Length: 215
Image (cartoon, rainbow, N blue to C red):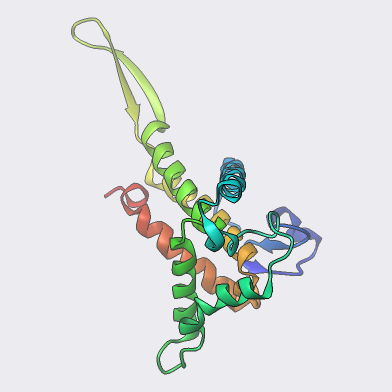
């Protein structure tokens, strides 16, 4: 995936972010079921509702405010921004002899997605669970035969590893979008955006290894 000023021919491959920003797929040959856009929107609505409830109850505290998306929070204070990026300074300020750029991006993505209060962290967990449930309960087909006793014997065919991989790319696509929305610095260049997407890809395939590779 990459941020792009691509022309009209690429509009069909754009993934809408908040506002006027968009992201263009660099893996256009990977088919992604449009239902994953609906799942991602469900995740956002659920997260926003939980955020509003936490604001009323004070259950998430100030930390939750650090990871609100632009759609929820119009403006953050300097203290909030300093606290957000101060948490990551140990990674960002590490020298190249200690951490290469791709390693820094990977660690930042892991840290953000591990935070259950952040929008990307919430979307990540929501879509991973959707994938697992979709694999478990929405098989590739249903076949009904009569058993020896004369009663119907229903067999649910498991989805193919290929369809599971395609669904995994749906998870990757929308988790990456939420990650870049909250941390636009991860999309400052096409190289950084690709590193961010690769980091998400590694994490998602790690979570869904059994489903995706059928092992």
